[in-house]
Length: 625
Image: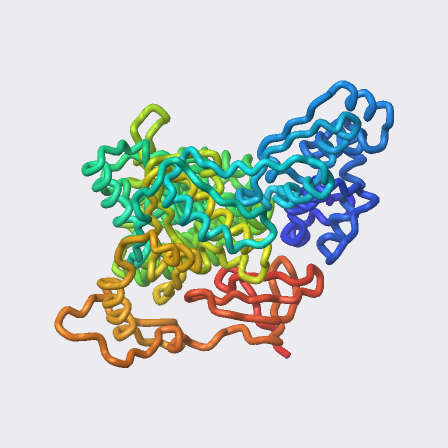
């Protein structure tokens, strides 16, 4: 990037090394060499210029990256007859497990190795192909049958884990997917306990239902905590669950992730809030002083710290001295530190005058934190995950308009100090659906079955992505040996104060089996009506309502209720509007739609082509004309 003069501050925002490397990795997984790489937009054109130079540097250093280990071997087998014959004679049999998780390079390597002896045996299930974001292509299972028409196909339809009820419910979800081998799953474990469906009012009540039900099934049916798993689509969903587990003193372990308050972006923003609350918090100060980078080097920071010690003051007080022009040994860098101090001081005043939600939003905007994580994310999946975590933090703050900064940082500190269980303890397992593959539990909770969450909103215009969401749900359901609980929330707090959710279409598929129990309406229906009656819209600031929605015990719901969705304010970004994005540049809105209390906009950018963005995190500027 430096050789192409694309390493400056502005270019770094547009051409993150992580994203460039991610696209190069994708090309290598598909056996696309630098000479064969073709651009489809301006960003990929830049990648097309970086890719050959990147390979030259690797070769000159006698090195390979991880993707080269596969790609170069596959190309060597393809292009070098001597090497190909040697290994084809050496390996008489080729066996591959989890074949649905292979990529193009891996499949071609398998074909090359097996071409002479033709003794190839693969085990795969396209219904469990859930790793497309890592380059895996479940269609290799079907391609194998095309490339080896004489192959014997054995359907492993007998299941040794789940009850027939669990299998039938899982089939109801997966059978709607195209491009798959139909299977009639059966088990000797006939019958089984019906799947429990539960609609909670919001994500906090959903988490409370989960912990209460865990206590109930352990007490009544003799399960241990280690027999139980709670699954979710996105890591951000764990926040409410972790909080509920902590409050109920239920031990839990997180698989394949870290607890909410220990995630990088949450730790960064909480460090800002702690320094605003306590200016002399040195640990938090050191975390945020250059996050995002503000040109304060290690030497300057060391000098500042030594000077603060010589003045017998904390870091916050030392910033105050710099702001007042006190003589110091820092020279020119003192101006940057003083500016940082003034920014913190302005937020300190805001904390006394405004609510915590606005303070947090000011910190995110004032530091440019959204742009910071945009630059550092290695791919869209990581960016969305970090963005979801920030949105979850905002949702937590928004729950209580009276919440003070002092109370919030104290409560967060207590949650951070709660230890998750180690591998030896009897603990409930919390994990994403992606991390659940290959595991099994007696009792499984699948939470957040809402349209826009599972299936995820990013899949709504992509049939292949939508099909993968069904496979995710299928994988989650089939982890259960005996009991399944499916939950969702009427209101998901990350959608904003008035954000309502529609239940997932997968729930409707499950309902059609007749193998379910649980109240879907009842009390929740009354709460929905009460919420809608109490909700009115402030056309500039969103919705306003009484502090807590209440069910109506004294009167029947009105015969005619105005649908909440009809009462929403107009979209901010209309089709044809010209906008500017800090990374993607200028573009035109080609579609905008409401997702909960947010807008999802599709923008045709001049440089990078079409992108789908969430307005609240996209930092779009509307251009005149």
